[in-house]
Image (cartoon, rainbow, N blue to C red; front, side):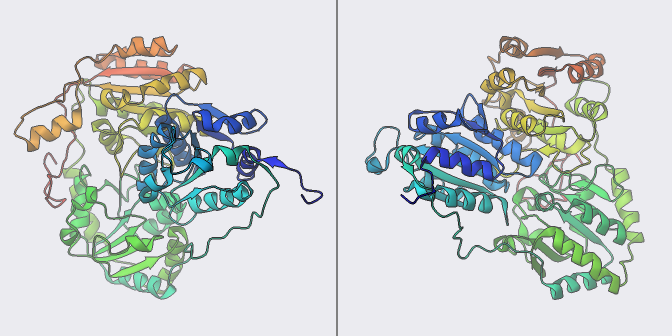
Length: 561
């Protein structure tokens, strides 16, 4: 060994590399092949949160990443521990969330022999990661960790997996090079200036423009410049589910969410516009109904995205711009100085008419989910983090909750993962301990990762859990109601526990609400309580999320609009 270099175990080398990347917390669950790493953790500054299921760990890391923009980190043992991460990895991949996923693996001499708790996790996750590493030489750990964090957090973010055999973690070696070797990996920066000038010219010539903003705006930190652009050129803005928060709720230029359960005015605007500026979106089927050829057919479409693969994948694009959304929008703002701003007074008359005629409607004289969510918005502050599970409650939150800042609304968009919410709220609360984390969930989703109540209780995390309990799988019931002739099947959640008693069994305060008069006081009580609280609201199973676009129909053909 060379003089001057200290010998370290692979596990220690790994933790030192993580510390250099600014990692302050890992969400994990131990196992036999991870013994060297858990031993080294005793001497590390990295905080470890012991989750109660590996899926809870990856969703917690995901929630951490969504509300901070930092790379989230989770850890699981080999075999079933690693495979229990798959849903969470896919969830992060679909929503472009930066994660570094660490998995234990059997010793290198047993790889490929079907040994105890062996699973080819790099092979299993190849379609749902930006890149995967199987480490066979401990000296390469510093380089691999550096590359993994760079890959996860740059360009279009996403999960990167590092598989670590036990003997690699236990090996005592000298550190090797930390120089990255990422040939062919390119992170787009500024867009093509000529194409940006084309956009400025197209804006000056249009009469019915719309900005269609997605999660890429939040990822790029482009919300402020997007607002500048919209205000300067009097542009209406619609957002995707993932884009909620990139443009402040209540702003006069915001028409609302577009798509399957979007605002009528937003859907009509996209259908009728003559110029659609799509920023950080992927034209997914929840917005286009899977009918790219029938989407915004009257418009010249501009697509700004950091991922070339998304350009023209779903809809025809007239002006494609590959680049960082913030940098592109900043250059577009500058380019507008050389052109006349669009004349949009008549367009705004039409948009306001739609907004006024088709507001979001719901009963306010009885206990409804929308009323509860609206009350939460009134009592919370603008820094409150709202995390949702998946189902009707998710869409009601997207429609009603007043999100005014980026990274304060976290939900599973692309994969639609029930069970995401509770551990994600846990990760969000750990990431931002000074801000309140509010989980909005349903009785179906809540039970999928309910064991993480133990993690919340043990770590004294003051998460406020808003459980909208209707006793059914609400979204499935609604779909059967509208599109299966009311032939209801397997949607009644008979056998639900007493959720208040469950919460209390974990040492968490529970408050049950079953009348309209109790709503405001119960929410206030929960918010003032210093620890975690479960707020259970009894809502009707007959309430639907409206409007809704039937399958295979254009977004203008909404029911209940």
